[in-house]
Image 1 (cartoon, rainbow, N blue to C red):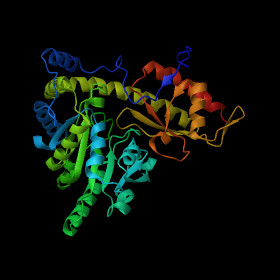
Image 2 (image 1 turned 135 degrees about the vertical axis):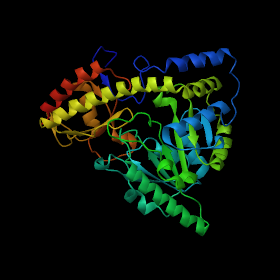
Image 3 (image 1 turned 180 degrees about the vertical axis):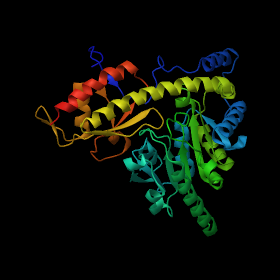
Image 4 (image 1 turned 90 degrees about the vertical axis):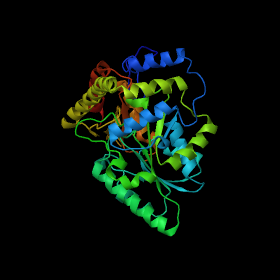
Length: 394
């Protein structure tokens, strides 16, 4: 449709358009300097030491958690760490528990031949799992997966909920230790930790419950916090024994972050003034886009149109529910999320991703909307088209 010259507000892309969201200038210049300075060899398998130290300092400063440098591993973004976690703490047939909707845990479970247990979460809880959701699996699970702020839902787990869940994990692991059984680990994805809005508060689980530190594998990256999805620098914070095992595994996979980028990120994370200035500008732009979508849809809801949405709390996403299943448009029956998505694209020029892409099988009318590749004008011109479409549904 775009190639045909038609207007499309593309809210499908979980990435940033570098025209609107460039990486920090100081980081870009640092990468160029590192390349010019000959930083082109293999990096150490656990990462350039300066970056590991810088990440440890960053985590202490930002999240009030303290890790030795041996508890930090650098990789080519967050994905190798997700993969490495599955392969390093699980055996085939082991039980992995995660909430739906969820980003890619189904694929990693398949790759690792794990037994995936998918727990459908509720909109009233911000699509975040609770201890009650996971409690039936505490005694036999090997890995719990958390993502907060969440892709795809744009919500943040409440600190009280996270604390209760971590205390449950600590209690279970104490029981297992007494019985000589394998531990239950928690994969904690906080790639969007810097993008938190309004009254929401992101807290690291080990800051809430320090006793859980031996069991938490926490991943982060510059992919979203610095709009550097293609720069490919991420890291894990975990117990040194876990990091050592993952280092050996990922070294054979070849999942190192490029050396020049590592050197530049080490310098940039330590430049607190530049980091704060970049975040202030970037976070304001993301929040303005999300707020524009949310305000527009809430206005439609208040006028009686059949939709609902969750107020965005973090990341670059908004969760939108269009209550159109069973209705008709110009005599055309709407039976699925796919039907809704096609209608939105054809009649309103809005492209979105259904929650089915994130494992939720129900035809619920829920969609993920991502603002990383759109402008305020795209949203402003799209919302009236959506309103006109919804007013025509019977």
